[in-house]
Image 1: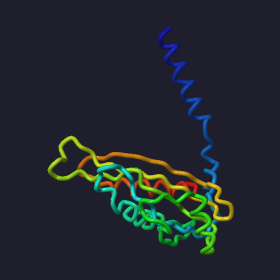
Image 2: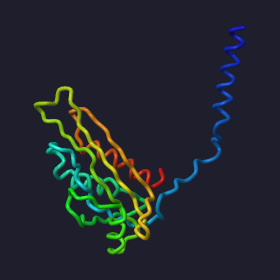
Image 3: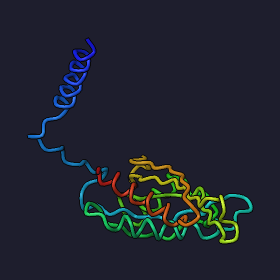
Length: 180
């Protein structure tokens, strides 16, 4: 009886796996979030605002540079960086970012802020982790509508860096916008 049940379980599993996909049909083409060849204006990101965390100062510029580099490898869209029309510690609403990009002639804008940026010092590395966090919004400049949103937070060993964490997040954002 056990052999019969085992055989039945194996055949059921093989049937389920075999019926789940048709290898003769190619995977559907990815669907980008924006038309191919579009230009996305990237407004410099806001710094994180964690009290008494010195690493937050300048984190927006660091994140913007990483995102420009990683998203700049896209085969679907192009990038242009816009200076931040308000201070790095001031809020820039999505509508204000969309209006700003529209006034510069861009149909799409990426607005964002760093939510965490912590680099462990060499003296305090034992048991502590690097941290990085980001919130980014891809907006249609015509109406300020959010086309895509990415909120992420991660940690890594002290042998890593918050820059490495943000690089991985930027790669995810690029792939998502491309539809991959």
